[in-house]
Image (tube, rainbow, N blue to C red):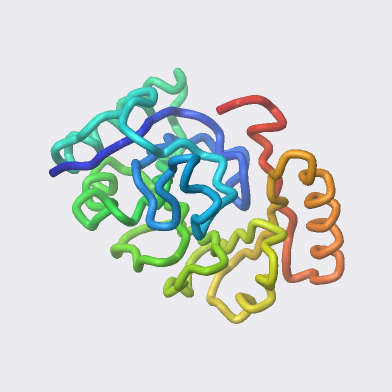
Length: 215
């Protein structure tokens, strides 16, 4: 069956506590909160997603038959990323929803290659053991069963969905990230700033990769 991958690329993490860190991003196809098709967006649980996770036609995408094959490809991108790779190798598994495919075998293969492993998840699936950095981004209308990790990143605002309900979750960092919503983006950013000022447990996260125009 293998691992269905939309794209793999080397870049800087643009959001949250790891912002600015070099990483290989590995984007899985598929999500359990939206099909990825525009005709289904209005009825989706997560209707504001800005990512293409449909198919395997992205840069370096494909169907990798084993965890060893995928780990080898990711390792190649780390070493091709620059002449100085003295830092700890870092991979971010994202999607869609990466935990529909990410399993213990792949985590183990990445660890054998010396990688720190991170995921970006909607929290509806419990991750396998061994992941070093877990970023949860909760979505209204989903059943969130993951309540422990590294950072909780709340896309703000979501109508009738209060970030404060997650403050008792066991996370090191709590972030508010303005929702990119066309003409409402500026308003959402101002609202996110106001929320963080009024609720100092939360820090502001912005998508620096979009501001700097890097992938």
